[in-house]
Image 1 (cartoon, rainbow, N blue to C red):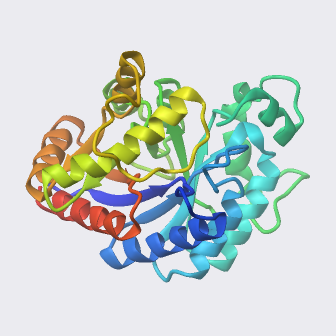
Image 2 (image 1 turned 180 degrees about the horizontal axis):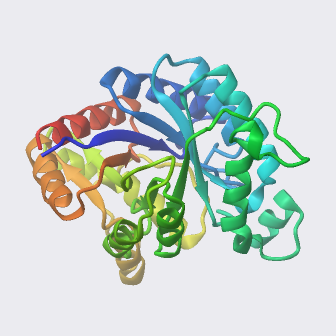
Length: 331
């Protein structure tokens, strides 16, 4: 069995009692740590009007991370294309690819990733622009492609950079698009795992080879909480549970320290919703983590797994990423 690649996704959460500056410093430190561990790529998310997440200016954070690392690929997980002009995205990522050749990825999502009013403020569009996603992806491919295929409007820098595009999704709709275009597909199982296996099956069965890919390439984003033993991991996982509880309540609170028990902190419906959102999570000590991953990989057979670790203590978060890589290598 071929060992799948491992990568990391960072939403750049602001920890309770910490500043935004500290969150950005932690973002760089984690990138350097995962690079040293041999991770394939390090992606940074896009979120707006959210005080608990510092990942609004994604391309700037990517540039900063590239500047402070040496080899690891750095990219967007992802650019929410309805929020942006494809031309500006092509210019920004074409510039990054010119500064850092062969190190930049461009993950693309169709959802705005924010509320309606914030989305309108970002793109100043009164209509629903997510419907333009397939066309916007095609325009981006042209802007970043060869000079011969350009129109009057061109991306400088951008032309000829061929920045790799990845289609992100949390339902089956984007699976069809990624398959049709012959692009890699990234499923967001770290917060919406319900349609994971169906989406992967659709992507693989409908895949059309392209100049980019001869065969499907599937990445699964998932939550990982690794620790010295199962009890410690379950304790650390309460930070993740509190994080998603805040999402359910639309309460934009910072990443909280772990607690001894979640009892009394959520009601039955909230607990059920959080558990559903985080169903694709690996939580445990080294042996448990390895067993959980082995079972997951037997079912999914993904080419790559992208880990998110909502752990309050930075040193313990670093350890979790190390333990995850060891679990994957044990397969």
